[in-house]
Length: 133
Image 1 (cartoon, one colour):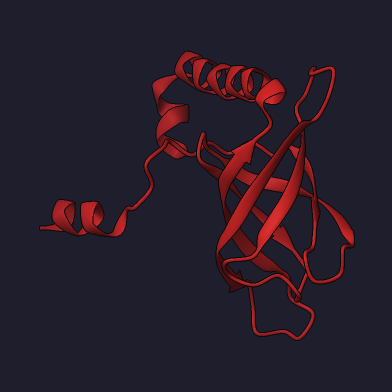
Image 2: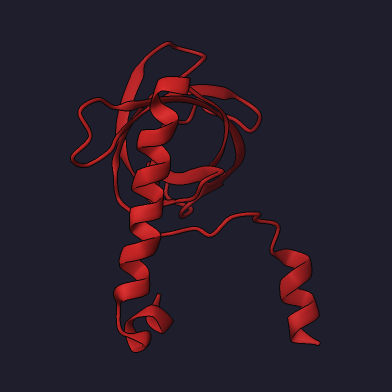
């Protein structure tokens, strides 16, 4: 029974990996550029934490992902799929889930290589370490 519940609640199409990479995004309401790090990332999107109260579900944001060892950042666009406040405190940050809507053609190979390398590195970890994730 619990397997059915897990399959019903899990809507992700891609594997998500914990990868704190630096990102910059442009808030559509203000045009202000914010810098933060991802909490996790997949081939379809990413999750990040920020104090930005102006972002809302369905906003489209411009993203710049700073991929380690890449010559240039990856430029993409994403749609805010969900937003959750992390605590009841007034100044608490929000968690944001973003689905990629576009990755610049020149950057797709850089991003996919980075993501594949993360998967490959994960497969080399001892099985006990993988289970703890």
